[in-house]
Length: 289
Image (cartoon, rainbow, N blue to C red; front, side, top):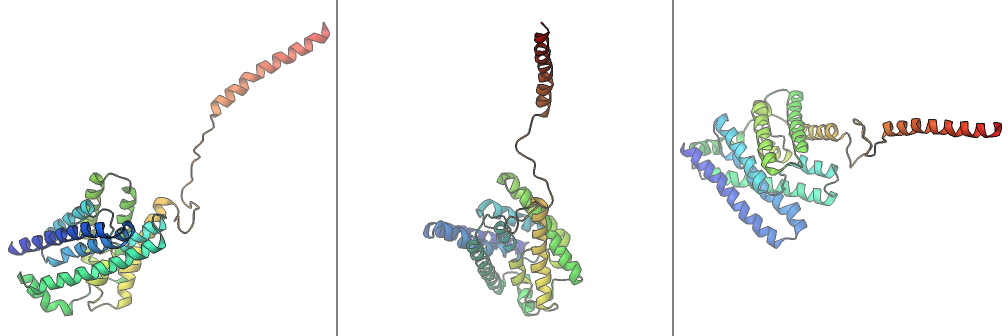
């Protein structure tokens, strides 16, 4: 119980510090620099929070739900996930320069977050931290199934996550935040035993790539290409096209905004026929007189 209290305190401490830094950078930096760099960097510092725990699945999933709920409520628009930034780019919601800046900030923020977590472990405030320090250099691969199955699992998680994200994109935060948090928690529970259920290339890069048991290219296929393919599939299925690449809708027919009132037209035409006949009859009857 003491270890849980320490980890929760660490989590809220990091959140609080990042909130303070976010307010400072929001005042010091221009809106563009803050939007692309600072908030992505700061959210990445918090993203690494659950990895300081080391508890059972029920506690980890509860903390994960809490983490994403806090993220959605407080980190105004930061994605903390490269596939979300790429999705915004493909939807024409972000420029190439802004997307590249976000990706760099996410990588730097995740690296800083992992360094802070390792420093936190080095204090050995709980027994888990002592064990973690001993095995940190000899961690094993988080891929616990075949590569194809692992890539499919990560891709499926990314697909479902992005599909829910696209569906709730215009929803009120009151509904969007808990729905996304519940989705991430469920996907982590379902795919966690297979791959760790990262479906976040930046998080996987710092948390899994340095572990032995799988090659670098195996990690690339599972944790980068899998989520990227899942995001593209979700975007194509939801939109019917990828606006940045092509505008033609391949899956759905776009209905015309203007509808022709066919019934009225027919009634008008039918109503005109007797008039034309009457005029014709009158014109024919005049010569006979």
